[in-house]
Length: 67
Image (cartoon, rainbow, N blue to C red):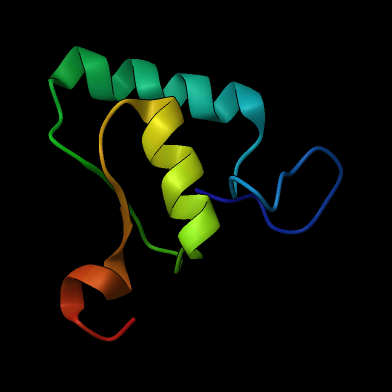
């Protein structure tokens, strides 16, 4: 879900603030237990996104045991 390196992208969160709110709303609407990102997350990104999304944020590599 990252739009790559560019203006407005927070390395702290991987996403722009508007996208974080959009993802949080979608997660709320679907009653998601967690949000999985295809990108690897740093520990700081994982903690920040977990806080902002109100549910665990994990990278796909974490789930596959290769991260």
